[in-house]
Image 1 (cartoon, helix red, strand yellow):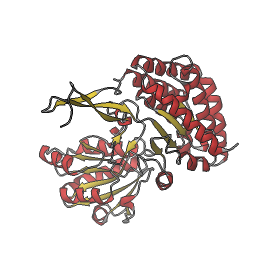
Image 2 (cartoon, helix red, strand yellow):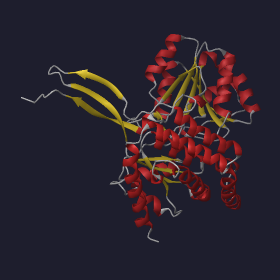
Image 3 (cartoon, one colour):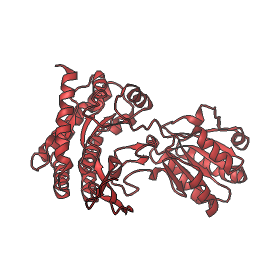
Image 4 (tube, helix red, strand yellow):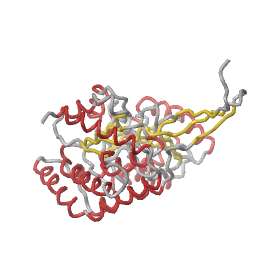
Length: 418
């Protein structure tokens, strides 16, 4: 089969269906989302049967335990997929929302209204739950979506698509608003990235190599998220017990995700008291600690950190630790080595916390909370399609609003321009 021709046909089908979806009433979209959720629950056995084909191949190919975990459609994962769709259905519909209106001296009334982007192309790895999450978010925001998952999840993704199409067929929403590229060949990605007439935005989710490949080859605008080098800055005067809990949670709760902390910055005035306690906590969780020279002066048994460590997203039970002379050095370190993802300060000083919020311009900046809360669901956005570290259009976790744009609307009463 001609892969390029098939992908172009799929893109055209999605674009045609998206025009119908863009005008669909909220009640119909929500009905479709609930039908999709019910379908996932009712077809759990079918989904897990197909998922086993991917898991068997993954084990044969020697994929890591972390990758297999991401790939597995367990009962809890399927339930989370269904619940996520129901949560999206419960959220307000952004499409058609008028953000504000203002009156001009000539009495024209000007406003801004939210509209869908059109068609979203998504390229992702490993997690087949992303297929349902992306479909739900795009449907509610009025967008068609064409998905290209990793070859390691091919059978799972196609099974999820089959279930979603079965559900959509019982509603007024066209089934073609959601499509999955039915090819595992790498060249399929190249062809998808050339469909600039049909696709309005590309969202890649995966490793840095995948995202750089997409950016380099796409004719379509790309929302980028290269990596998550997230920081926790433990300021002088921080409450010690709070700081210990935040650091352990940020690093060890799920070390293989992008909002896990990779570097801990510690104010020198608190380092002698805090570092031994923090190190004991992390080592109890099997974390390898790599420290700067000042850290090693206090904890000589640790591994030395290199300059490369400060810019590394470990996605593992490894963390780098740096003692900083003060607030300014911490902010400068984040600016130099961070990836615009998520940073948090642990402090009891209100004014210091406000300075941190103002001066650190990552997509999510926190005070006295774990970086693990940098997540659309945890932030009240519902499921997220990804976390953007691109400052244009959307920045941070992308929920429903991030999948829309605005157009200007004008009400007149016969005005003409003189």
